[in-house]
Image 1 (cartoon, rainbow over the protein chains, first blue to last red):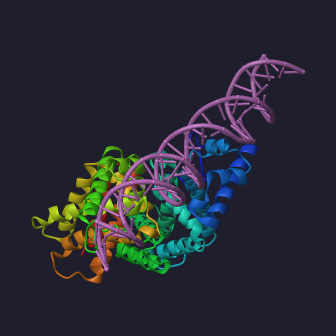
Image 2: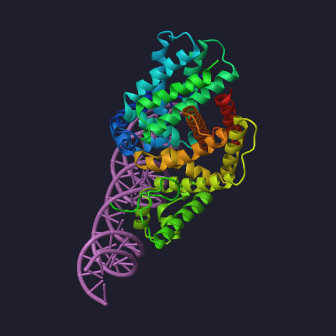
Image 3: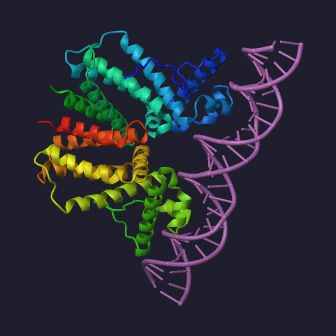
Length: 205
Length: 205
DNA sequence: GCGGATACTAGAACACGTTCTCATCGTGGT
DNA sequence: ACCACGATGAGAACGTGTTCTAGTATCCGC
């Protein structure tokens, strides 16, 4: 399990390509513009020309930093997850049992995302649209989510292989339910019921 | 807007707008062309102009029958699942336990699809890209898959609400693992291991 | 058979992701 | 200070999903 410390949100080549401060600033502006547009109108509102204009870089430069719209949005999701991880780490996870703690973490994360449905739609859609060229970024996001879940299950103790498998399955269900919601087939309340049911089922003793 | 766009293609929910035989033939040609192109080059090879040309209909007509590329591919998936259901129904599902029977059905289905990876990529990608306008078709596909699983669990007896929830979770994992495979993050062998693990976990007694 | 509605054809037109071209800028080595 | 070179800016160009237009064919009630 890779450390999610690669919060740089991108690094197509090397994780530590030396960047000038101007370059770090450009990257940050791009991510911010992306999040703003996604929040306003979802996946389709994140238009590459518009992102470039808002972040004050040329279109070609945008593509140098993020080789596709999907790379861009998956990187933005890594950025958001990192914020969420920091926020969750401020206080201990409440709950007596594994189920309760995992429920708490996933519910917090889910609700935090559902509060901005357009943003969620954009990020989840990108995760699902990712092909092999985005494997590295997608793996980063999945590792971040898995860390959240495993930490809730184990409270810091070393996770077993079984734990990691459980976290994977729960993540699969989580993403699939988001898709069902995007597809207009279930409401956001039903999503949560389904996820909680899956937690109870997977983590029953 | 009174087009035959119910995209019935097949299946129980066919509201069966009356179609002339020429129209049925057009619809069939379109689906066949779609499957052929998908099989040859996956999602990106299914180009609407090419589908129209091969099925000998005008582009506008193609869009009257299937209002988007995603509608088209999801309908094609319903068509393929229907074929699979008929094939599976020919003989009884082997296996002593629920797990064994569900494993059998999902393995058969998965392998049958993995034999044509390009086609699978096209169909799964479309399912994931579906938005609310395709909800009806997607629900049709999910119901077909759920029926397959529930039948394997119950061997014809009436399913309980719990059974349906289990089938939903297994389907979620199934689709999520296909996505992981499309994303180049796991091999097709690993997919199957993961799915079987989920079956064992969800259906343990 | 006739007339009006609906379906179909052929093709142009449009939108947005992506690629390409070329001029300019900034920087590190000499 | 200068040069070489990669990074950036500005914008044209291309491909494919989708929409639109105008003319033609087909069907259905009379």
